[in-house]
Image (cartoon, rainbow, N blue to C red; front, side, top):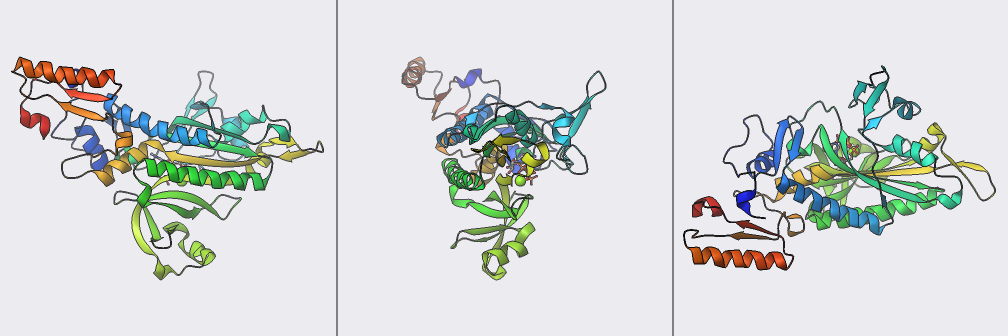
Length: 369
Ligand code: ATP
Ligand code: MG
């Protein structure tokens, strides 16, 4: 890509109302464009990073048998009523609207009920299970506060995976595989060292869910962590979890952190509420087990910026950098040098190397600083 053709330009200033470091840096470097609080567009540079993050996640989800699909943003109330999650008192982030015929509609903030409804149509017998499906979906949430830049969007990209099973043992087994896959993902994203599998508030089926929390000053959560023992607990469940694990609170150090992933076992709860069943080997109807696994794709991008940037700006881990090479053409007034750098650019491109070529007629200081 020739930098002279990029419509985004690096800027010295970020919008006055943007307080989050991640968004300030991303806006200044031309990776995102702020539409309003909590709503950001991704420019060609930002999209390349986002696509690379997605690709890493996709590879790891495929490796454990995940099948990619895409659900819908438009959600009919019936799908959510059977579990009580259509209620604004239960779920306080719904964006709701109406069809022209007056019927209500919600915009997808999550997709457990949507998946269960759909899968109910495909599952007949135990032979159809297990199934693991995932998507990259733009989630819409009417968040009260959106002051953390792309780390808390009202519109944001999530990877959500759902696994359906015939037994608890099978669900437990798969859940453990997902934990390992998630560890590989955060490792490949450059966050491995500071990301902890964390005891967090659970659903109805298990006492705890697991969050993946990355130590980060800009995060909104507080984590209690013992680095040597590799144990982390969300502040919200500290008393419960510390007694359950058998670790004294004074062995845990408190740090700010960002929730970059959250995984849950629903067990048969949704199957029972929504009447999603399969026939076992004896032909008897049994409720399907469900677990769900989220990763905040755009939040992860924000966390990488927050954690790895230095005083000169964003530092991308090589795996997710928008380009592998930034070729900076200097002395543009000298035609032979321009020819020379053009040659390097073309040969890198021919070799399939992703290269951003700064071919602009600009001062050296503007290019290198
Ligand atoms: P939070 O506690 O931060 O509000 P949550 O627990 O409501 O998040 P989940 O429903 O567990 O979120 O969503 C799965 C993942 O999606 C989270 O672990 C987080 O990484 C990401 N996520 C959730 N809300 C947002 C948001 N508003 N903007 C960006 N990412 C988000
Ligand atoms: Mg969560």
